[in-house]
Image 1: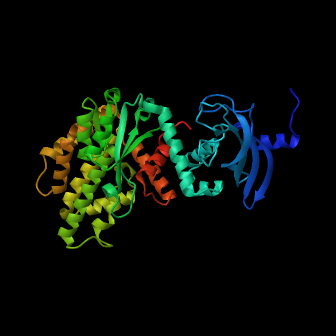
Image 2: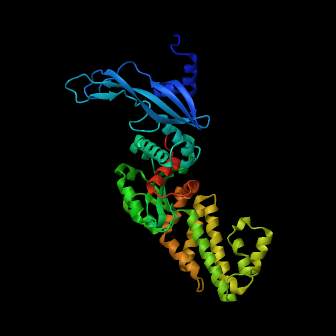
Image 3: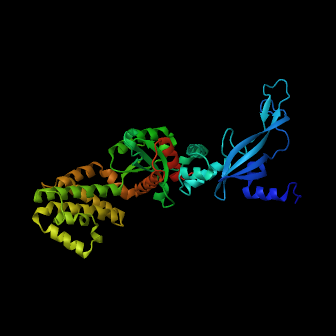
Length: 437
């Protein structure tokens, strides 16, 4: 090992702050309130070459470049780097004076070091910190840190390139409300598109592919049309809720893919019809909305409980409700609701598919008068019959997409809301896009 050519204290300082990574060497340091100020000089092998003509310049003077670096022991750190300047002596060159290349330290014109961008990404994506918190740590403004995060995430996306979409066979589509302010574009809704391939294969979690403005057939179709043909040909399954616009968009853009209506939304639709039936019968029998002590109102949560999970007390309550002849419509609707749940819960896929097929057939053809809610449910399930039953063949659920929606809600709350959809998209992809940091 060669002997050090600089004082031991300088070596210790360079090692602790790891300034060698940036191509600079510490010469002095001081405290400025909460900020640590470190003076540095560029590590050079001699005069730099002129960017205009490529000839070695002649030393003229030096200038100071100030950049923000990653915090040290919880305090902001500012590097004041002495950058040599040279004079070009080539007569045919239009460049007279140029500074030594400091691109290793920071991008041209940037106020933060290159590794500062990595720090910002880790704090936002892994630690789930807010931009405001990171700005306090760095001693910079919110706008500066947000600009660093946006630029760094865009670089991650460019680095990943089209290969980021390779191997996507199952996608999930759902709406999401990102802006809760009056007058937001598209009423504040976006279309969330996720990759469910690893989930269906049992190999890993879902990941966010993109966030598209508006919740419409056009939003999804435009996004799919913008992808290359190889991607569209690779998509085999599209999982979604009951919104017909997404169904139409998927059918037009990826006609060979199977559309699957998510089980959660099917059960939720049946449960909503059960609530409507209960409320209608409540009005017909008592002439008012549910009140404390009304039998149907008291049983409203029990009616939505899965049959296998009912306690003895809940079963007795339901038996008392169903004993009244005027509640027969509620009982029939409840039984259809429970059969739909049982079909999805059956461990045997073929048996579950057969059971749900029988339920759809009965709701479509064999209903007596007075069951308006079940009649409407039957029409909907019959219209989306192939999508509903496709779940048993492909097991593609939109549940992981809903989970990502929940993570995006947490992101929005943590940030106290967003006003710019571009920032929201970038932050969403950083949080849920499985980008390689």
